[in-house]
Length: 213
Image (cartoon, rainbow, N blue to C red; front, top):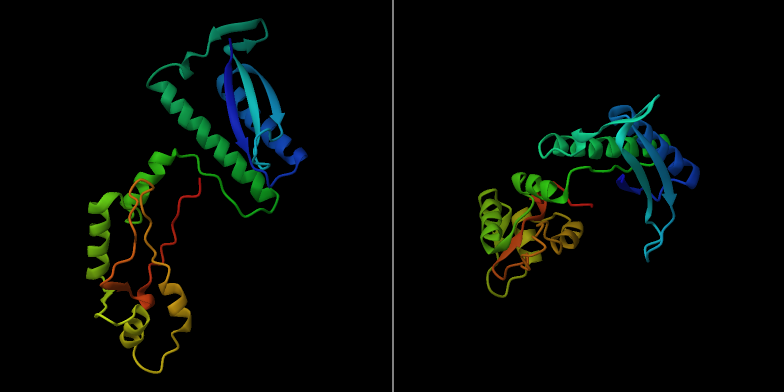
């Protein structure tokens, strides 16, 4: 019996640096839980050549000078176990980010589960789900003056030029207007464009948040 920790590793690091990362994570787990641990670094075996990963196989008991002793039950409890799993995720993300930074790579790892990240995105107003959420987002954009009425036979680009006033260069805005900055639910299946409305480019949503998992 053993505990198996499977960890995805950043492909941006070379093999020696990835192995240093694996050992760093392993040492921190040993320091916290006191178990014996075997680390294995694996190359990609799937279609994605970036999928490097490791397996950390740990004993279910603490390893002391006298041998294996008490069970590491802190990882088994429904309450404490969940907290420890969150700690492990946070440590893994922290060490990945630290090793990427040491290698001069401007990238970061996020340890929160996807569901929690999506909830946070909803709270920030950058994620909508279903027709009701889409209407709420449109209503907010109307109140903030980000949506303009487009008369019949009138293009969105013309509406933007009129809103900005004469003599202004709108070439960059016309390009950005085609990309409505609304993040939709993967299950919503809705279009972010409307026949009677266009997004005001000079008040374009600057949030730029997206899910990168």
